[in-house]
Image (cartoon, rainbow, N blue to C red; front, side, top):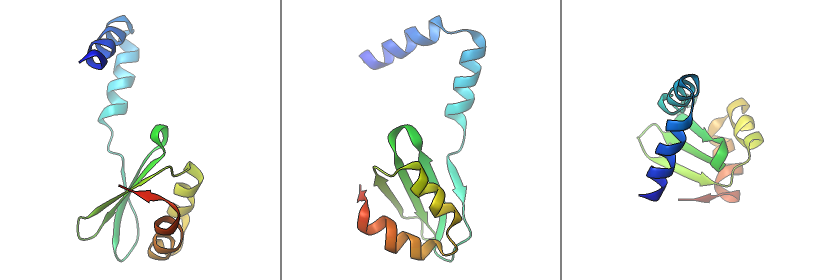
Length: 95
């Protein structure tokens, strides 16, 4: 409840332009579709260093502590499945 109140006070003090930018940011879709035979899309949350991987079957893996450069390398990997199994799964904690 206190977080809500604190955030409300910040929004009250913000300018209209700041509020518009904030709303645009939170309304954006974080998922980026990828070309893969079994991975559907990726979502990366930079502030939290969290990478989510959505599989074709709908299952979502959440990896904690993933640096942005690892996410960017995943996007560029020629085989998303190989990158997922060789880099992400053995090195990063899933939730």
